[in-house]
Image (spheres, rainbow, N blue to C red):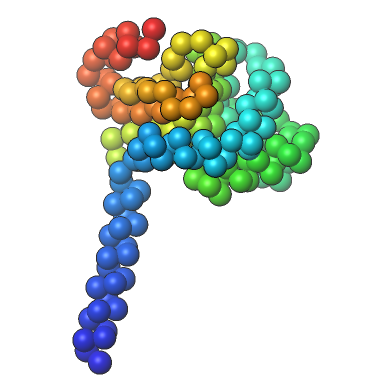
Length: 172
């Protein structure tokens, strides 16, 4: 009986540790590409929707923690008129997307699929709005092509703040 209880405890601890380390380490570019491929229809729906929204300052941050029919960004709310958009947002959220952002002035839209607050590190998929050049995500330290004009990006505030010009020059 003690042996069985010990094995059960080891199994529970191992499962917990794997879960904790999975959230500590970022997905790879291959994982991000798989996220893109598995969610492509929903991503396309959201990209098309966001490109139709007019903003005053050409920069919009969309935190897609939606409540019923509203998507929030910055300090304003926008009603979501389409059931397709609402459904796509729910799918993306349930599949691991934590932030969606579009910055017209940086010519970039991105879907963050992982974030660690300790050190302010994140990663996901991004693309330029016009299909030209590299996307630019704040504190970006890595950017590499994955599929169909999309890029895997990695952000690391601590690395970026030491030498921002090093990273800013990379993506021009």
